[in-house]
Length: 302
Image 1 (cartoon, rainbow, N blue to C red):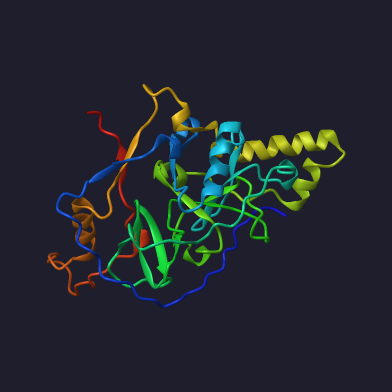
Image 2: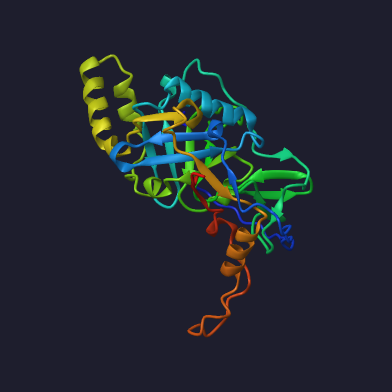
């Protein structure tokens, strides 16, 4: 069975709590640990930089880091890219994942509210939503989970919850009904434009799969060549952990601090449209958490 993400939706009505006020001396940006940065080199199309969040899902973050270091993604593809849904990358076929260790579902965890920065308005899917270290999260009681907002990075799997390997998906639009059903353990901090430009393509058909792994070597070769041609623009040249690159030349990133004065000002600007004279009706002072990702940028050299 292929590691596909279902495209059904659920709705739930919930409320959020008011945002807190950051200390006056709160830092505005935090440096991203290069050990937690995975760089997908997409050739002429650019680079996709992912920040892992191992505190939320240590086994899944470690699996992606190990996969990048082993060359798992090198020469592979974003082989399933569905408009308005997800972009999924990896080795596509179960036959090529045999013998690889599985990782458990780590879709939510028990964690104190310390360090949680509430968004400040209602949410449709969770009692509370906000951010932790720049990652969009939901909370219920002392349980917390990362959200399937655009740019989130999550582990695909089979029906059994503990069957992830290193196949990852990135939502192209909010896919919040997936929250807590799949392990989100990172997010794209640079290169989401590259993700959005990926060619839309479905996985191989059962007939193609049978041909690829059948006894007819000539047919398998023809099918593989045709599949590679179809996926060519979605080819992953390599995936690397930033910490493994020479320090002098590796990309470095920083993320706007939450809470922090810059973040509070940005959030307020997206919640208050009362100053726009062309509006006949002033929108409510609310913002959807998936429409306002916490900004990230290349680090500024001192």
